[in-house]
Length: 323
Picture 1 (tube, rainbow, N blue to C red):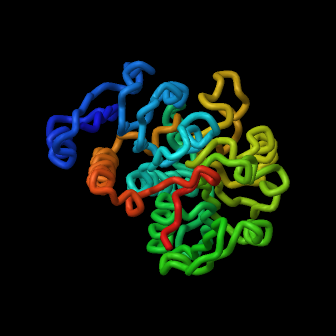
Picture 2: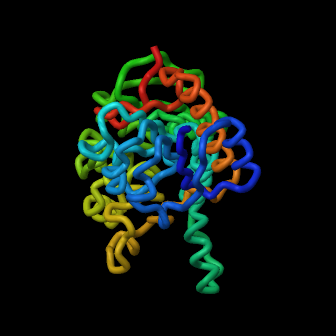
């Protein structure tokens, strides 16, 4: 009998779905904060994120289904035994985070954050000219579920969409142009919006360093919803202070949480949210996570691990491509 530890906050209807799918398995429900190394020692399957260090004692573990899209913390050597299957929750977050990104795009472009500050100060003050998404150019760096959904929405609003990915592939309909990372320097000066939805890896750390921040078009807007270290934070502060960018909106920072005395808080035209664009704030996000877990559980128990959704490549930290 397979023992399955579930750490996501399921309701009774979710439990019923999982237990029906995993008929004959033994389910244990807990939380990430309450789970212990001993509690994982007999687990064959874990559904939900846990402290990676606790997995060193999970000697029977065969499969870990994450509730996050990011999986880099679980790919490090020594965390999971060789042969353990790792799947993430790619596909669950695109709806919520892409809508957050569109909202942030409008907020920055129309200077809504400045008008809100004026309201707090009881100031009736015109903040000047704005631009439009229609007729703009959007550069999407990272074309997973989140980046792709943002590109779809920006294209529908009339923006010319350009995608950047690690490897070559067929251009999807929601992109007008598609390139690999090697072309980034030539693309940045063209974009009115630059969005980052990248995982943490050696190749993505400080992908937007000071040199590339200065390649951006004057007045352009920068968004980051992937990992905070994709942007050189100190360089971003300097560039914003100089007035080069129209604005920057981030849901992730480096460091994170951002210390109260960090200069990024007070950088001009800067909007910061505390890593809340995903999580479970939108109920549909959680429903999608449960469905991904259930579909993968069915395949795993049927011995069809090869066709499980979102199999993670331990070397890259990215979802494996289908042949």
